[in-house]
Image (cartoon, rainbow, N blue to C red; front, side, top):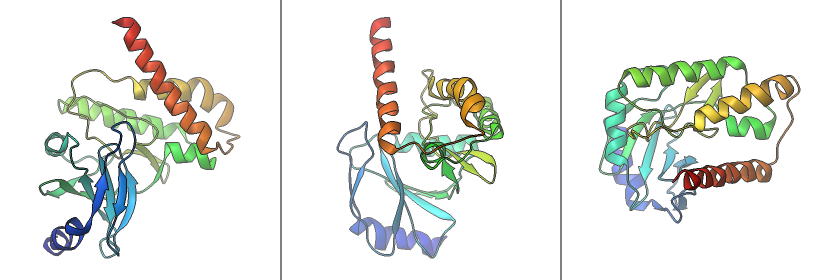
Length: 215
């Protein structure tokens, strides 16, 4: 662990350049030193790996993006659970986490990979566990849930500290049970990215309009 921390702080962070251009879009990686590789980007942070430590990832927050201290606290509060990652160490703006393998549900839709019912139930159990730990599951969507060996896992719990309710997982489940499972599970097909992104942005716009009408 200590040798990996040294690589993070001496080889990665001094040469890494990431930027959050829009808080509603993934951060942009302008430069990532070799041999580090990016495995994902979120709206607040980038996730990278080193080939010598394949079972660990480093999540680095972009400058100016909030939530780092809260995410550290969430990992400390949630403890050990097989459906979640684990924080082994954190620095000034990064977390060293257990790597979660699998294919996101978003990517499953794109590649035409069947999403079994068990995945939905696994995530439900994981979210129930988080609630028992005093956390509020938040921002659970197709890019934050992965399928691996038939099991479902949650790869991003950074917003579990927020107290306001979030309906994203409830809405995704509704679409799964009413549309996907009865009509597409046995005959999946590949959905282009532009269609998936259109659905994602339309959903976000719908939720904003719905909230505006309520106010």
